[in-house]
Image 1: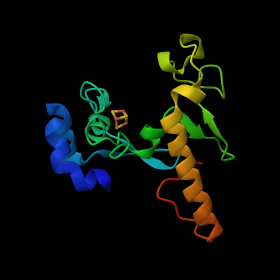
Image 2: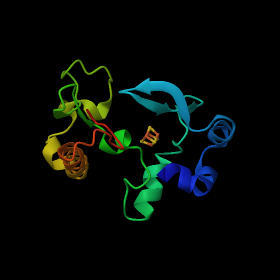
Image 3: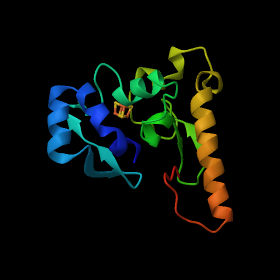
Length: 146
Ligand code: SF4
């Protein structure tokens, strides 16, 4: 909803080929991951990537870097496993398949509990919202991180 409502100001900041894809087909693909649609790509990159994440940059300019980002992107590399337990994606853990520099604990002496404080707070917020809805018997969630 946030992206839809702000698309007119997001679009001009995207790469030309990404603008064309979004105008023609929208920004969501039909491919699902953890039950949610994934973002479309243009020339091999997420349509919102333009020398960094445009959605992140726009939010940061308004002092809330998570304002426009999809929940899964805002939380990365934190996610919940199939039992609802939150964990940090990292090389060598839970069959992590993505070979990213930032997912290798060998590349930083700083523990994730320090470097991911904002993401951890966001995960806590999602968990609190999820638990509050569950207590009210509401099984719907805007974002289901589990
Ligand atoms: S963080 Fe998400 S929305 Fe932003 S460029 Fe990466 S995949 Fe796209």
